[in-house]
Length: 249
Image 1 (tube, rainbow, N blue to C red):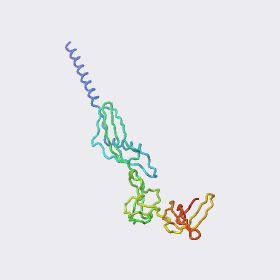
Image 2: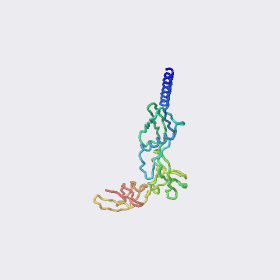
Image 3: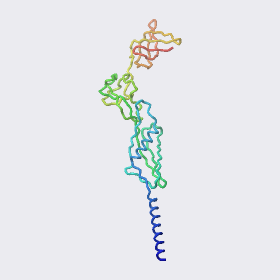
Image 4: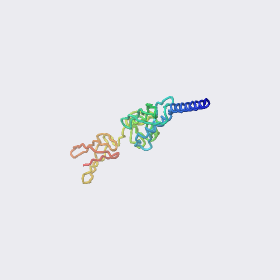
């Protein structure tokens, strides 16, 4: 009888210890999230939610500015990720990505600051360009640069750089921006030009005239046409070449 009770007690003790072991195993099950995994998720989220640049050969790049220094521990086994941010527009150059990590028994919220760039070819000054000097191909070189969405004035690969002149002195290494340049005039004030009058019927009349202001191709300028008896008429037309202004009547 004593032997039977001893065996029964031993069985109960073993069962109790086994249940305690299982309970401890469940209680201490955990998930470890490494900082690199958070960075990878954040970059993928930003790239997926940011529109592709309109420029050819341009790509979006993301810089993660700050990460947890230590791995993030969560109790539980089934990890879920939820990422969001509060950018007013997808083209905002910086934001904080809210990363929510959750399991069946734990929850963590982490804010990850990021900066968003466009990597694209731009014109960079190779040698000193003096103020009012026209830009030539030997003055500049095309290089890939990381730019933020705050740089809409940068002159890129699609722009005809030789159509511009410098507003002020430009040092080597300067990334060219439209604010630093002006379109080189094709016609200058007091130039004798050919004024083409295009009638509604399609008939064209060409007369000589004098430019009253500078104008690049595509710009509208005032010109002075000489009439009979030393009379003059001021008209406004569009510069189409280095010696021609067109007015459509």
